[in-house]
Length: 310
Image 1 (cartoon, rainbow, N blue to C red):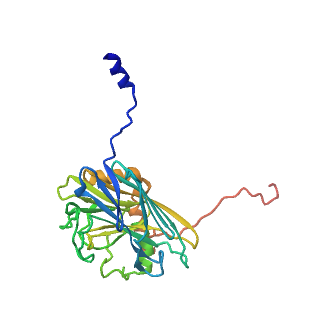
Image 2: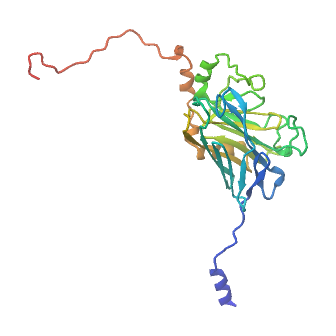
């Protein structure tokens, strides 16, 4: 009996516990499903919108979600592909790692502000009007608009409207493009005066037991609370000349925890994207913010020997 026990103890453990999350193919992209809590499934619509000449000419054009999708047999990975576009997803304990590769196959160069917008959302009731609010996962719907957060220069702030918060790094470019912050999408997404300091949106569940989020290391804007109760963090794909490629990494989060837990993990995963440059950037919004210099005289001593000794 003792020998049998020792032999069993020495055998490798072939059957490991499956990961807590799995990826599932969905009609508009890929869903992230907690195996033990399918009612908390979140959905990645890839992708919904183009901004500032990305993919197609125009300030704001419709994206393309009718793309080829392939989910691995174990639900641990997924790939979405289309013309000039590839999204790879890999399950990790608290969500999924995202990698987007974009190739400019259009007939024009894309400017620095060019971006695409995937839609991270709680799903939609089957058969519902897609232009109306009918969330499938009500736990993450945030009907009160008090459980969704973005990061400003002051820290976590509530995202309580449909206003768009541009990343502080690109606000000077946007102000030159439109000093009043008026764009073709401003009727639905008015420009907020409060800038985003990093490219993540975070939402706590109705019972505040779980948290979800989406973020990109190179992000133009964050925005939410559209008809699909969604969260938009835009992937900045510019500047990109015709024929060139760009790769951007991101994350979706879905785990038991709080908004602070999610932000901490984001900062650990993308420290460079989380550096707070808000004070410096605020000082450079206009020439008026440059330091004032008094009249002065500058002289540089020289060792030049006019007698020819050098």
